[in-house]
Image 1: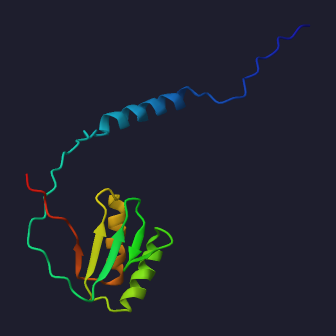
Image 2: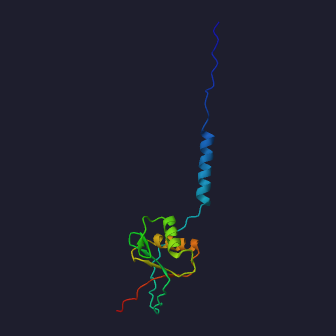
Length: 139
C-alpha cells in the first residue's frame, strides 16, 4: 500500500504583512512631514560711527586672532578651549568681575570664537562687556 506523503509546511516567517506595514508608515510620515524652505539672508551689517569710548585703566582685554586663538591682556593662551579662557580671565581679573571686559576680534575670525569669549565672560559674571570696532571709511 502506498501512502501519500503529507506536505510539510515551510518553516519561516511571512514577510508580506511586515512590508505592507512599513510602506504604510513611510507614506504616513511622508504626508505628515512639513518641509521648510531654506532661505539665505544677505546681511548688511551696520558700521560703528559713534563717538569713541574713553579708555578705562582697569579693563580686561581679550584678543581673538583670525585663526581663533586667544590672548588675554597680551598673553597668548595655549589652546582655544573654553576652560582655558575662563581660567585666564579669572586669573587676570583676580575675582573682580565688575571690571569692564573688551573683546577685540579680527574681522575674519570665526563667529564661534567670539561667542566662546562672550560665553566665558558671562559664566564668570562679567557684566560690562564691549566689542571694539573701527571707524567706517569715508567714500
